Image 1 (cartoon, rainbow, N blue to C red):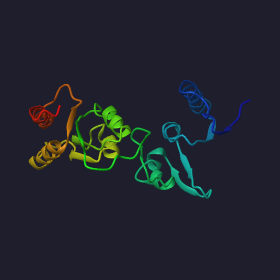
Image 2 (cartoon, helix red, strand yellow):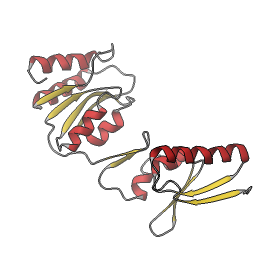
Image 3 (cartoon, helix red, strand yellow):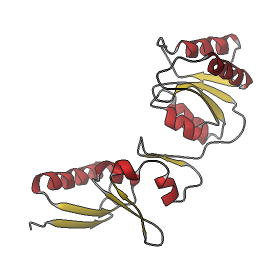
Image 4 (cartoon, one colour):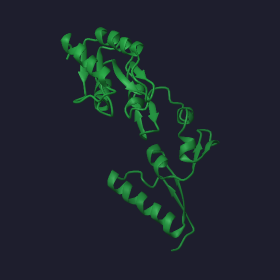
Length: 207
């Protein structure tokens, strides 16, 4: 009972979250402490991304698509190409899938940031309501989700102040929306333009 290699076929299938985590914890400990090599086949991308040291991606014709570290495999459009994803997105930053954005002119403008807007984005998507999100910096934690779900994203470069052009675009889009949802309770110094958007929406009676 002291193997050098353990081969597992979908070991986490049919397990609830607690038991998946317990199993993966045990396996990882065996790798670290007993230097056992563990080879697993998995369809759960989030688990493969988080636990693996190296990943082999197998295409539908059983040929090798990609091989490398999780950081290499889950970069760029590798996953989209491998699974031929046409509707929706796999966000490697979160290890999660997002459904396809609702197309059309935005009816709702969401003022969010630092993750506060994510639940609202997903709810609007489920209700089939196209929406705009902004102003978001490209390094904001919710930016990838907004890019996946919003029909319009008003963005600013990371660590940059909001330009006049970006703010004017945000105001124009906001005024064309029927409703504004503000997810922020407080605004930081850099988010002053977002506070101004909130004030404009309030004056227009859209909040």
